[in-house]
Length: 182
Image (tube, rainbow, N blue to C red):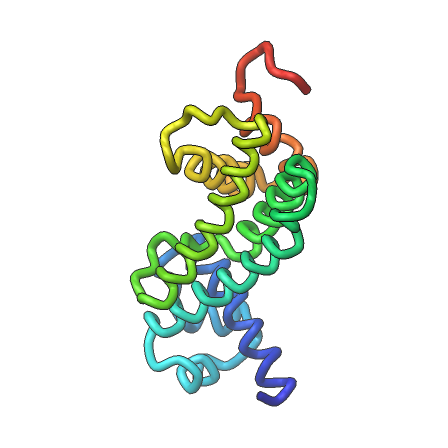
């Protein structure tokens, strides 16, 4: 792919994620304007709105896999990896605010499950090391982590990613009670 075509594709996917994350009914014309391209550029690349969404989901999952790799979930100390995962996940949710849980394409669903398995294995490690209660129902730590990160990313956009990650880790590990550690 030519460099200018790659830049256009990245701009289209990024603008699409932002606009469709805010308004699932956003028009292709608005996406093209936000990406700085002609709408025909989008239609040449994507046959349908669904194909565009599919590409957005794949790009978001690629970015999430990169965040997970950078967090070094298997090697880094759990707290260090958790903070890196939280900060990267919050930044990613702000850049790509589409909800990949809405994806139905089999390749996206399989990739999402693979990523969730990696995160789940990390949270099991945190349980073995005593940072998370090992008696919780299966899947709850991952669901809670997703919820905390998404909430801080999208509901409190003025917080820096680093500060939001501090709050995410503290809230995730200690809850919101008055007796929690800081």
